[in-house]
Length: 433
Image 1 (cartoon, rainbow, N blue to C red):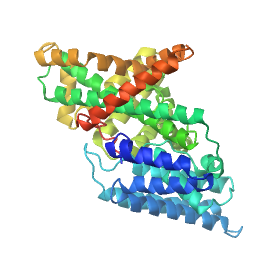
Image 2: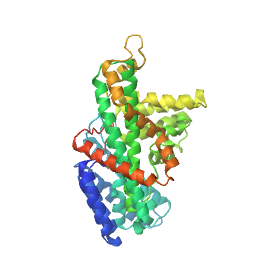
Image 3: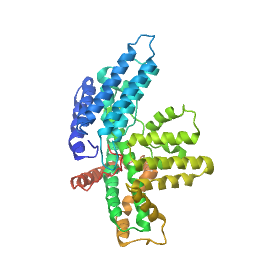
Image 4: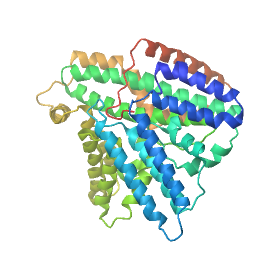
């Protein structure tokens, strides 16, 4: 189920949260589990079986480790369980086919990693065996199910056992969720329409650069909006998560990119890679390869991630300190995601730089640029964190909350019109959930 679908926004979201606030606290975890399972069932047919297998085997592994005699190595047993989990993941992803030329959606990797992280923390820190219903509530928790963040059960354990939900927290979560909805429906949706139009329009220098810019904005805003929705939905349930995506263009050097982008996945893999005795550049490329593998087996995504790795290597060896090099390289790396084929990638490169044979602008490109200029401008400001900075400056003003409520109401009305009119295109280029 998509978080920005009519089914979720008009039916699941209001019914689930209204009942959640009405029922006694002792039943709220059961309701989260029931709602999360319903959310999973309305996804892919095979995903519910994959989720159940991974979660049951992980919990059984914890149960086994907690009851082992002292002579048997708990660490070895945990490695055996992790091996079984990876084998199950491999069996399921072989049968899953998605659009955008990707073999499997990222949610398969999210489920695998969160269970592995919980198992490793349970083994290393000799934690107490979780209550089975609490563990399945954690494992199926729908706000973090599709793109993360990846947190272990023991990070959520305290909130699962008892949490306080105030009106202030609910309001903050609701506005965070709405903000993500607006960004994904109005901005990502509009930019996806623009991208489809540019792909079939005559090639020019401006259309090629505009297509590259649009592709980058769609992907960045897709992740930023999902992070806002995850944080908002979780806060409304009484859980607090850190940001998984935090304005990727905020980095100073390219090597710091993943401090703002796919943060929890990067931390997991960097703990694995840091133990290997390999040169820094090789470690960086291996780290990026593992991250690309999480997204799904896709040539374009692999080239994009490895392209960023090459940029990190060049920056480390030759550039040393340069703010503009990293940002320019990051921007140009999205060339690999503009078109799905190698021939398409070649055409994109040609369109960007062939100033001697291609016109600078065509009638169609000029029309698209004028029509979507405001959308592009707002998207750029959000991607750079400019809108966030402006909001932080004016939120202490007396009329800010009234002005915000009016704007959110208008934008929510526009979102529903956009969704009902079928104008919304979910353009995420392989980051399918």
